[in-house]
Image 1 (cartoon, rainbow, N blue to C red):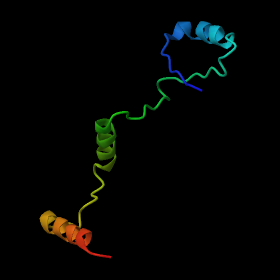
Image 2 (cartoon, rainbow, N blue to C red; image 1 turned 120 degrees about the vertical axis):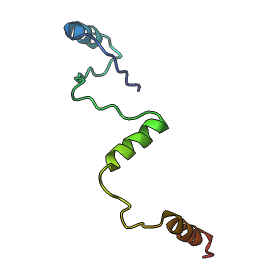
Image 3 (cartoon, rainbow, N blue to C red; image 1 turned 30 degrees about the vertical axis):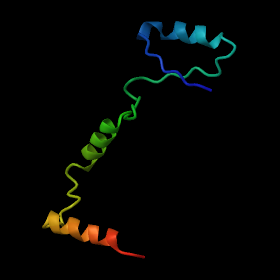
Length: 82
């Protein structure tokens, strides 16, 4: 099954819903307003920027005083044999 998203002018919404509901292979006609519609980021760049926007102002790495030293310690953990 496939879901299609169609943007329609407000004054045409009801007529399109009526037409679609009469087609036998259309299972459901659902309406969402743009104000409640949340678009999921589609590209990798959009996903990364969305994550960074959420992290702004949360001071996630306050405890790291020397980033280079911190990275070296992380890499040492990667090189260990288990």
